[in-house]
Image 1 (spheres, rainbow, N blue to C red):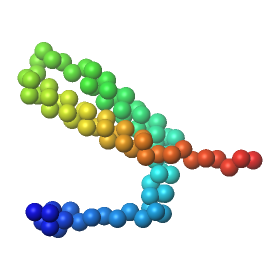
Image 2 (cartoon, rainbow, N blue to C red):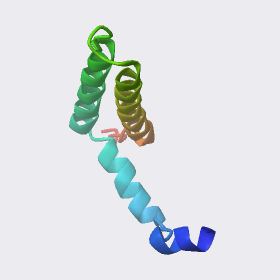
Image 3 (cartoon, rainbow, N blue to C red):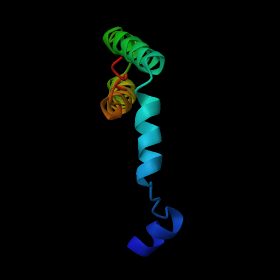
Length: 88
């Protein structure tokens, strides 16, 4: 089974230089602001779920989707390390 999964989803290696680029990109203040805005909107969506007009199954699915979105955003924000400006 493992071989079949490896065939469909081959491992992707990310080098040190590529990781540095990813970390630098995620540390861009405007991108962090955008991600925080998405998280805020998702949190509002989570709090605004109307329990009256949805079935239990639909509430669980909606909650799981929004929670998953928040976890992805949180992960992206946790990767970013602020770029240190050189001292003048």
